[in-house]
Image: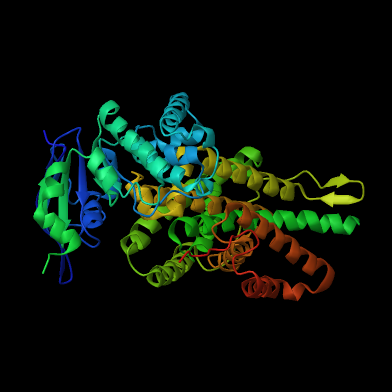
Length: 255
Length: 300
C-alpha cells in the first residue's frame, strides 16, 4: 500500500490555479523532497494534505484512506498525518513537555470525566504518556528543557520541538515545511541525521519542503519539483540536478 | 476597625459570586475571543433551576448543607446542558463568521433567555427557598458574621480550585489552553476543537449556575431579569483582571466586590452601580489589557 497517493489534485483561489493536476505517489518509509521556487504551491499542497484547504478537484489517499473532506483534527488522529510549519508555530505559552502532551493526548479513548476525576486508568495512562514524551524529547536533544516555556527556547530547539510535537501525535506520514530555515550549518547536520533516524528507526514516511539544497540532496531519496503549481520533474537527487527544466525554473533560461 | 473587617468579609463574599460568573466570561473569551453576553442570563437560569429543584424535592423542609449541595448540583448540571445547547445551536454555526456577528447573536441569546424566563417563570420576583438556615450569627470578638457569607465564599473558592485543577492538570484543560492559544494549530495537532469549545462553555455555564444558587441563598429574591446587572459586573471584573486570564477574573471580581462594599459602607450607596462602570472606563483608558493581562504585540 502507498503511504501517499495524490491523483489529479487541483486547487483554485478565485481565478488563480495554485496547484494543477498534480500526481504524487509515495511508498511507505521513504523520504521525499518537494522543491520549487517561491509561490510554486508547495505549502498549499501541505495545507490540502492536512485539511486546511479543500481541493477543487482530485483525490488524496493516505495509507489507502481517503483524506478529502475530513477535518484537520481527524486527519491528524485517524490518518496519522502531522506537519510542521514554515514559520514556527508552537504553543508558545505552554511548556516544552505540554507541547508534546497536547499532541499525544488524543491517542487514547479515556473519557474527559475520567481525567477530571482522575480514574486509575487515566492516571496510569498519564504516567505512561509523560514517560513517552520524555523519551521523545531525549531523542530530539530537548530533555534538559522540558519545563521551559516553548517561547523561551533558542530558535534551533524550537524547530526540533515542532518535529517532536508532530511525532507525538502518532504520525506515520510526516510533513516538514522548511525544517532547516534559519538553522546554522551544524544545526542542519543534526537535523539531517534526525530525519534519517526517524525514517529508519520509527518507520516514518517523510515529505519535506526545503530550500536548503544541501539537506534536500543528502536526505531525500526522490525529489519532486514544482513550478507555478505544476509538477515539472521527479527523480533521484542526481537526476534532478541535471534536469534542464529544473535548472530553467530556478535560474531562468538562457536567452 | 471592626466595621472595616466587616466590609472586607461582605466584599469578598460578593466578589466571589462575581468571580464565578466572571470565570465563564473569561474562559469563553479565551477559546473563542467572544464576549458571551448571554452568560449573565445563565446565572439567572441557575437560580431558577435551584428554585424549582428545591420546590420539587421539598428541599427547604430539611435545610442543611446536603440540600444546598443538591440544588447546587442540579443548577450546575442544568446550566452546563443549557450552555452546551446555546453553543451548539447559536455559536457553532457562526464559527467562521466575522466576530461581530457572533457578538450580536450573543445579545440575541441573552434577550431570548430573559424573556423566555418571563414567559415560563413569570415576571414577578420569587422568594428563593432557605436551603440553609443558620442557627445564628457567628461572633468573633465584636465582629458579627453571617454564616451564609462564609458558605458562599467557601463553596465559590472550592469551585475555583476545582476549575484551576481541571485547567492546569487534566488533558481537557491542556487542550483548552492549546485551543485558546490557536484554534487552527490545535486542530492540526489532532485536538477536536469543537468538543473542547463545548466543554469550555459547559464548565463556564456550570459555574454561573452555581453562582445563581449561591446568590439565591444570600439575597433570596430571584426574577428573570436578575442576570443583567451581575452579568455586566462580572464582565467588568473579567476586563478589570485582563479578559482571557483565569486568575485575572478572580482578582478583578474580588476587587470589584470589595470596592462596591466600601463605597456602600463609607460613602454613597446610590453610586454602587456607577462605580463598576466608572472602573471599566478607567481601566479601558489606562490599562486596556487589564491588571494581569499581557500586552499583545504583533511581530511584524
